[in-house]
Length: 103
Image (cartoon, rainbow, N blue to C red; front, side, top):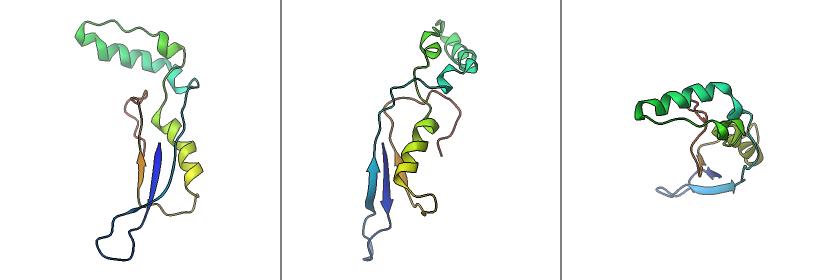
C-alpha cells in the first residue's frame, strides 16, 4: 500500500493532505526469492538457535522484496518529474531481501 501526501493547506498549522493512494497484492513468484544467497543467509540466521532452515519456500519463489513491490506502485501514483514530499509504504509481511533499503 502506498499513500502520497501533498503540501499542507495555506493556513498555518494545517495538516498534510492526502493526495493519492493505491494498493496491490503480490501473489506471484519473485525472482529475488529464488536467489541462492538467501539460503546461506537464512541458514546462518537460525543456526544460533539450534533450528534447521527449510529451503522449500525460497525455492518455490515465495515472498517478495519491498523494492520489487514499491516500484510499480510508485510509478502508478507519481509522475517521474513530480516532486514528492512524503510517501508512506505499508507492508503486510517482512522483506525477503534483508539488508536492502526500500528508499
